[in-house]
Image (tube, rainbow, N blue to C red; front, side, top):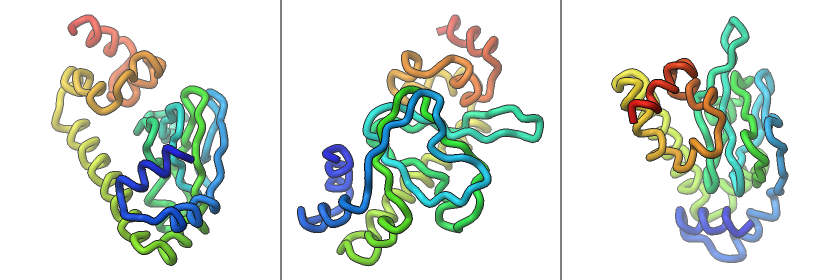
Length: 188
């Protein structure tokens, strides 16, 4: 719980007692490589904090093809935030790319934090702002940059990704085929 404690302390002013009271409502779980943390069709009731490992957010199109929308790395919160907030069925899967340990914040813990932490609302807002900025940058990246520019910048966003994530997942994230990704790598 040290990692999530450190991240929360960087985001808000919180006493040891408040932090302990909040974290006692969470739990840690390890997911195997390729195991799903969440599935489409269910209403998301958890936010995951990644202690160790990497996950990807996947959407499956009408033809049954998986598309990688996002990667989550250590010290990041990840969820289908929109559906979590709206209490709607998720369209996304969240999958462990490698063995991944997460701290799970169930909806009840999040709501407890909003009600009982002095800066609970600020914590929620900062997490939401991070997610909003990431999604906005992601959209700009997909539509306003070339595939080469997207490839060149991926390690700025996700350091060490090429050593941890299969190339077909990176290609999907970049919006290119695996063959085109190979060409981009050769151009570097």
